[in-house]
Length: 117
Image (tube, rainbow, N blue to C red; front, side, top):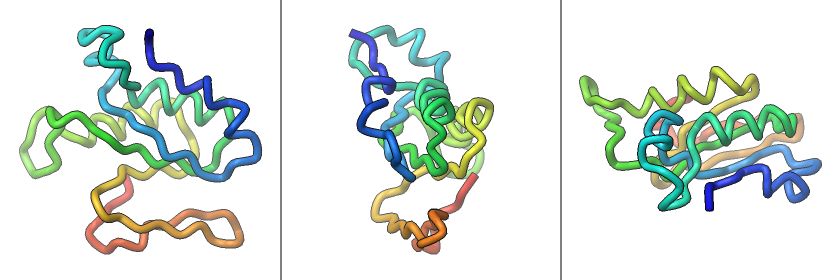
């Protein structure tokens, strides 16, 4: 069975934020195959865009993606792939990040160390 974020379509109706795993880029997901049933950044971003979700938080990244300078492959590849398919506000979650959804439905990360791509 292949991971399919669209299975969440009904649950996401009227939602303002989607927090979803994006373990791989699509290229890596294609090489890994349907098992272990993880989503790619592209799959999730396309779904979020189609569902008109204004805020997307990606999480649960493969350990192959590095976050430090000079690391390859880099975590920013996931963000870049997602941004090709999603026009809303995108965040890459880190452990212990805290988010706030404001009354105007804008999402912000309250954790100082975190960055938004």
